[in-house]
Amino acid sequence: MLKGKHIVLGVTGSIAAYKIANLASMLVKEKADVTVIMTRNATNFINPITFETLTGNKCLVDTFDRNFKYSVEHVSLAKQADVFLIAPASANVIAKAANGIADDMLTTTFLAAKCPKIVSPAMNTNMYENPIVQDNLEKLRHYGMEVIAPASGYLACGDTGAGKMPEPEILLEYIKKAVYPKDLLGKKVLVTAGATQEKMDPVRYITNHSTGKMGYALAKVCALRGAEVTLVSAQTALQTPLFVKMVPVISALDMFEAVKECYEKQDIVIKAAAVADYRPKFISDEKIKKKDGGLSLELERTDDILAYLGEHKTENQFICGFSMETSNMIANSRSKLERKKINMIVANNLKQEGAGFGGNTNIVTLITKDWQIELPKMSKFDTASAIVDEILKQM
Ligand SMILES: Cc1cc2nc3c(=O)[nH]c(=O)nc-3n(C[C@H](O)[C@H](O)[C@H](O)COP(=O)(O)O)c2cc1C
Figure 1 (cartoon, rainbow, N blue to C red):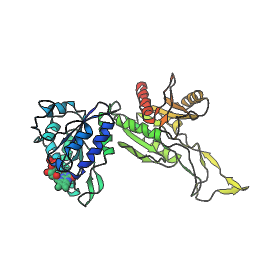
Figure 2 (cartoon, helix red, strand yellow; figure 1 turned 135 degrees about the vertical axis):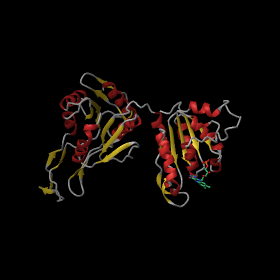
Figure 3 (cartoon, protein in one colour; figure 1 turned 120 degrees about the horizontal axis):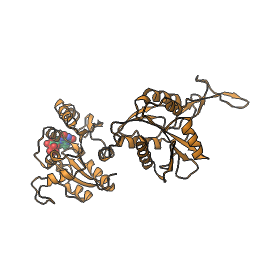
Figure 4 (cartoon, rainbow, N blue to C red; figure 1 turned 45 degrees about the vertical axis):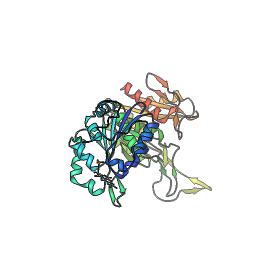
């Protein structure tokens, strides 16, 4: 995703500057070409040699340093950049950037750059909450820059509150989002994921093996590609992906209600959740009745979310479902596609190694009314990208 991309990192005089060494290293591992520009004050917190060693590129501090590759280095760098991230961004550099001040290498190059620009403020809570700083951040947003909300927590100055720079892993996600093609911009996507739980008694429940990995990968891919994503998620052990609106649910009924509430506004709906077909019939907290030494559990069908979506499909909406089969995968999936009146089914054979629940890979066949294609074994993220490519071709 970042291979060959030129990422410029601006580092300012904040205690959080040391964390950018980790980010630079992560970017290099992803094969990005990284240049770090530091303010003079930032060099009090971390030595430029650290960045030069990690990135293999000269770390720039002084605008009038003549030991550069190009004659007007700040302009050449600004032109090459695919993304420019200032992190940590001091209150001082934020103020300069918001007002077009270019009095050092970092602020001059930032002003000259036309690529996507991201700013990650890091400072003491009182500084961050100061209306002057807030106005400056608003101005940066107004000019199209992405401002990453700082995390709250214990700050290096001993105070607790908002102003903490997010961890490098999160900054990396913002960089990825900035370089990703935006072919889903303006589209609304609803993804359901995870394993629903149907309560049997106060202790036990019926569930399934879904880990939510496929659905979360789909939500992430769609968000990176610019869609406004709502993720209705039943139980998983996964972290909520960035850039998505998360709606947590527990049972099939909760999921059905959450979907009913928002499906009409969506351009694409992908039902990747594994929903139990049946739930225990009783609804009180009483214990399951014992009968003839065994458990007596009366079951009733849960709502068929996919059928509902197919039935109530709005004009130009694209509905994609999943089908997990252990035999006759194509025939059963095609019949499901027709029965549920949806646009595409992603089918996989649970008996195939590397496919289905749990693992990080999948092997799927995409089936529509007129054709089918089998995708090779890929990571769930790449499978999700291929599914989204195909949906876009069909729409
Ligand atoms: C130990 C220490 C930590 C600092 N941390 C921050 C910080 O997190 N955010 C900030 O805006 N300023 C912080 N400052 C103040 C800035 O370094 C100071 O405003 C400086 O002028 C910023 O320069 P620059 O924006 O050119 O990098 C800190 C200062 C010291 C001494």
